[in-house]
Structure formats: C-alpha cells, structure tokens
Image (cartoon, rainbow, N blue to C red; front, top):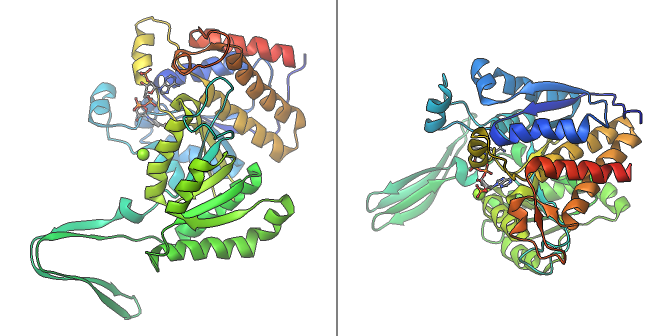
Length: 403
Ligand code: NAP
Ligand code: MG
C-alpha cells in the first residue's frame, strides 16, 4: 500500500524518559509504516535543552508559530534532584511554560473514553474538556502577613499621574493581605482561544467566575468573554448550532456533575487548577488524558497530560518490560495529524488519524490493555494485560484490518 503523503511538516518535540521510549515505538509501529511522516524535529530531551541553553525549546515554539501544528512528548521539568542526575548547567524552566508564554496559548485537557471503563460520575457519557487560564490571579499575587492593627490600602499610580486609593481593611489585630492582578490582553487571548477551540471541536463553551461577589475583577472576565463572543464568534456559533453559556462557578460545578459531558468548561486560573484534577480523576486514568495548547490566532500543540513516567523508565533501564500506557501520546499524534490534514486539505491523512484513534479504542474495548487500565476495567471479557510494545502491536494489527 502506498504511504500517505503530507504537505506541511509537523513540529515534532521529542522528550524524556519512558515517554521518549514510547515516542519512538509509536512512530515505528503505528506511524511510519503508513504515513510518509514529514516533521521538523526538535529534541526537547533534557540533555539537549542543557546543551543549547534551552534555545531548542524557544526554537520549537517559534517553529510552531510558523507551521501552526506541533506534537510534543512529555519532558522533565528540572528540580534540585534532576540538576544532580543530569549534571545541568542551570535549572531550566518548564518547557511547557516557555512554549505557552511564546504562543500566548490556553491548555485544553480532555479524557479519551472507552466502554468498559466508566467515569466515577455515572451520568458522564461524553468527555468534559477543561480550559484553564494559566496566567495571573493568585499565581502571581503579592502577599504578606499583617503584623498588627493598622490600615491596609489598595493604591495605583498611573503613568499619567492618575491616582486611585481604597481602604481594604482597618485591621484591629494581626492578619493576612494579598494583592492580585490580571490583564485585559491576557483575558482576551484566553477568551479567543476558548471560542476558537469550541468552533474547532464543535462543542458548547461554558465559562464561570464569581462575578456576583467580585464585581470588578471577575466581572471584567465575564464582560471580555461576552464582548469577544458578540463581536467575533456569535455568528459562527449560531451557524454551527453551538451555545456560549456563562454562569457562576458554584452553579457550574453543580451543573457539571449532573451533566452528560460533551462541552468545554473554561475556568479562571485557580478554578481550572482544582477542577481539572477533579474532573480528570473522575474520568479514570491520567494516562488517558490528552492536552492541547491553542493560541488565540489558531496555532496548536498536542501532547499527553501526564509526565515522563519516571518510575517505569527506571524499570525499563534495568531491562524489565513495562506496561506503560501510550494512549494519550498516540492521541497527541492523531490530534496533530488530523489538524495538519484539515489545514492542508489532506483527507486521507485525516482518515488515517481517525482510524488510528478508533483502532486504539477498539483494542482496549476488546480487553487488551496496559496495567493501569486493567485495574479500572469493568468490561465483560476479562482484561488481558500486556506490555507497551505488545499493546502497540495489537493496535497495528487492528489498524491493518481497518485500512
Ligand atoms: P507522571 O510522569 O505523570 O507519573 C506519575 C505516575 O502516574 C506514574 O508513576 C504512574 O503510576 C502513573 N502514570 C502516568 N502516566 C502513565 C502512563 N502513561 N502509563 C501508566 N501509568 C502512568 O508524573 P511525575 O512522576 O510526577 O513526573 C515525572 C516527570 O514528568 C517529572 O520530571 C515532571 O517534571 C515531568 N512532567 C512533565 C509533564 C509534561 O511534559 N507535560 C507533565 C507532568 C510532569 P505508577 O508508577 O503507579 O504506575
Ligand atoms: Mg493542579
């Protein structure tokens, strides 16, 4: 069979540890036999980041801006212990943070669902995608302990000489104080990425804050979302039959639990941090969570939500076979190939990506899976646990039947 051709290269960002091993196996077993894979390769593995002074991460992000679609392997974010282990010159920043800052993007996380592994919340039938505004608020706050009685004020000095000052509280005892901020430009980018991704994936968009209590801060988020919806997206949403729905965060939580899923839930930074862990845990395994970074001008970087699975890697290095789940990494590739196909008008590339996703799900639903899933399995046939490579080979066999 002739291999499927590509036009524009994908930006390929390699990574670390167990996911780096899976990365190569996925390419060898599931991609290159079928697709004449065109990628611009960037090695974001920690040794190469260290050798290039992290320039390779910046170059990869710039390439994503240029080509529009990237696929990324999980990477180590260095800490003290990694400094030792890899003899690093510097404690390099998280590559995801660097790439996100350059693309000004928002991260969307969604689970891959299979029959036989049911969410803890029994009425969830479709994935819930969480979009987190990863900028500002409490994550960039200034705070201190107030030592004793005294007045706390919120003060702003405009560059033009304007002054604003309000009393926060007249402390009669010791306490705590915090100042937070966000920027209209960042909220706008967040809103655009959310509306864009809703249109892309044909899903409704929910957005929630606490604007009844936070009448200026959270209300600004609400207003900016509404302004961008009305000005740039309403017509497209109506044409596609999609809904933009704003509600209070506490009402949203109640509705999410009662819902069937199948929408995007956009959250402020803290809400997104907390809710994404709750939602992903309730859906099952972290190894089934996909993640895509979307910039406001429609650039995409696909990856798995999990890390480099260090514990499995240490076992792999001792020569043991591991049963590490490659599903989220496979779906990062299929997401990127499908998007590339869509942008370049390559229907056979899109069909391939979709067939690979269906084959992956079919193998699990047929009872063959990695160890992490076997523990969650409630299917009728007993689970057959296999190592990573045997799992990839089972998917290839299923794919061959379908192509
Ligand atoms: P992790 O790699 O996500 O793994 C945590 C645990 O979750 C694993 O030990 C494993 O549990 C389970 N797990 C995760 N993915 C799995 C998979 N595909 N198949 C089977 N089990 C899976 O998180 P971590 O151990 O906290 O972090 C390891 C490294 O990854 C760190 O250096 C961190 O900086 C990096 N990291 C990178 C990213 C990213 O690039 N996006 C995100 C998070 C973390 P068992 O050991 O019990 O089997
Ligand atoms: Mg968290």
